[in-house]
Length: 125
Length: 305
Image 1 (tube, rainbow over the protein chains, first blue to last red):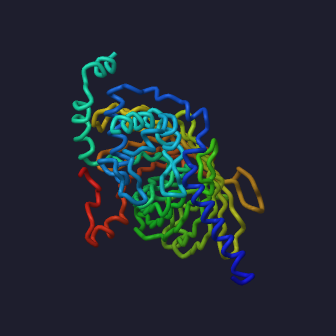
Image 2: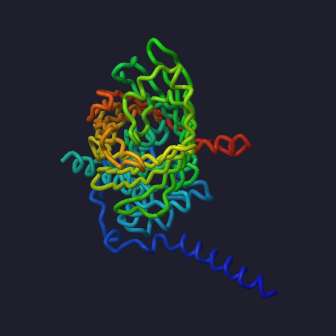
Image 3: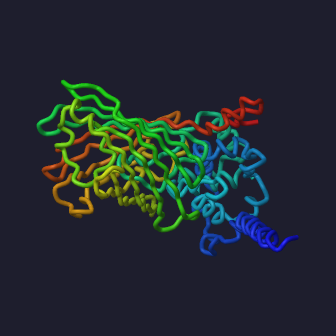
């Protein structure tokens, strides 16, 4: 390995690791306040039906009607990650999005609609 | 009370059966803000294409009544990057109808997280004639006299302009509050010209009611925007330029159609006294998939399987 290729390889490797760390740690950096936030609409049947409507309008195109995604960039929403996340985690993720990985921020949706989606996602697990 | 009763009597299988038809119907799609001049930090969802016409109807003092329309093709390149093409034209009573030019713009969100104030950088190249009357922004010392010139004379003036905007936008308690700082430069000779636009919107109802509807309150967004010029590098001033205030109303119709309306009122003698704006938008979901699916994979709508 020449003197020149080593620094280049180091930079590429560091960047790859940083990107990988960034993608996996998105859920790990949720503020405690948001993590602990309960869904004010939990257990509300109307919220589940309304959440299905919001899901259809904004999420279905990528995550599919069966919430299984496309198996590649658009992840399944019936998954261990969603099952083990708190309601607050999911609402935070909807609000923030993951712009670097193609997930838009849904902060433009009223908070009540985000909680309705959380109720729907909980229901379909 | 109603929800408690529902919760008691509706079992999960019945609830699921009630929700399944929802997922098989056409989506209503995004409920964008009904701004005409102001930009918020909402970008187009990646892969989606929105086609919108923004029409301005007005009558300048000493001029003829006109209608100017900008057709906007907005594509979500990435979740943090939206690119747009505008095609402008206008028709003036007792004069002529003409194509007045095009604009290409890009909007980029430099911060990947949602903050209290979210910046967006806007870069535009504009190749229009002096006959353009769409008033998609007000800068420098723009006034109604520019809009009163006959098309035959104004179309001879070519405007090759670069425009930069700093968009700051916040979503707070279901309100959107946006502020835009505009700077525009004729790439030939003129000085930098400046302008502003500020706006606020709120949905008439925050939660979705859980039933399909067209006229219910959650389908409407109301608000107001104000915009005007701030002079140029020679005279940075709010005088001798136009300023407007305009209430806004947006209505989300079925099948991805959005209608917006805004009557604008001029606040200075150089402003048009009134300008009426109408917007009609249609959003196409995941246009990139249309081409992928033509190569033989599954349904473009990714329906229930």
